[in-house]
Length: 137
Length: 405
Image (cartoon, rainbow over all chains, first blue to last red; front, side):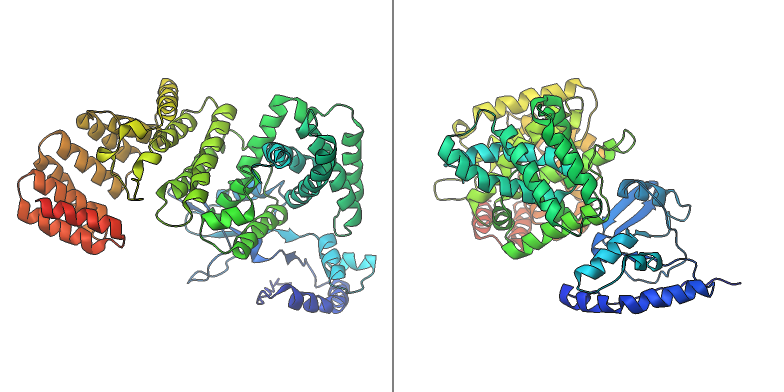
């Protein structure tokens, strides 16, 4: 079956508004479970906010590292990797190894682990059972 | 907080304790909060019982216990149980290896420097974090020094700490492969802190002096921790040589005094001597670099009878290493002063377009034209320089020079 990547874009909002948004999570958990049951779900990941983003480029053989997400210009999203790395330094090192790094910008975003996601939702006052963690990844 | 002996002892130890605690608790923010808690406890206990023989060990222990308390209360921490257990184990040890062992302390401080100066943090955050964590400046002091509102500076620091946690910016000295470029980044942060204090164009001069002192202290720390790196010595030398002239750069009326007109008796002899000694030490490592070259140039300029030929040569080397129009301009001036002004003017000509809006270019152009006997051209160049300066004191000085033509 062909695969499709669904990219979720949203405006980053104030913490109070964000806490309110977390209330969709029970519905999300339910949806993820049904997608998995239907055999459609490959993977789902929540990212930390763009405040923790780092952009990596290789230009003239030098790795350039800048704080912040990729600024939208004429480039478009061409693909993605999910890597397991010990820390940000390793992630940057691997990003710089990509053969397209000399012309592309690689935005490195930490994935929010499912248990952190669960705790974030609970901290916003939303009640979720422990088992929900299986449908947050 | 400087006059209070309790606060003073605390400030002396704070950075060392913080560096150790970040490693032990694995969390920048938690470590800082715990050290702050420990400070509040120290104020009460130390005032009552006197400052302990080993204040560092006292604070480390107190802060670690506060961290355990905070971890126990905080539901949002993942591996809470394991981390509490690890801290309890450390707490049960009689020995306090991290504060008794000099090299362990050094390792922790070095880790902290590299974390604070990590290239994935924006530059202003690197500067603020370094001053906060290693220099022990308060957020308010840093905000005043950089003419930023305190809440904005606080937000910047909080954001940086969150990124360190969320993105897992490591708390370690980079491996050999990364070390050279990362160390250059650290030196850049230090020199930026120093220059921010030294430039003193505006803002609270006292707080800004603090920035110079802080940068010098961090320079001392780095030469202690990385004595095999020539550029570490070079930067430290450069900052000391500049700083030796700090008082002489301003006259009684608060006006800027150019190097040539400075009262040399007001130079700080100790700083000068130490700066030259460190430059010497750097050069003996035989790995030239831009800070060493700048320090060598500064040292030559400070000699009573400056050797402009040698200065021009060093600017040439600097231009090869780190090409920039400003370095080319300085080289042109040095060549003009060393030999014929015409030779300097020839080097300066191509810069007139590139640095069109750069006041020092037109001032230098005027000086060289004047030396070459072209008073009319010099007057025109001074006019351009005057039009570009926003600083009243500077304008006065330039108008004086133009009148002397």
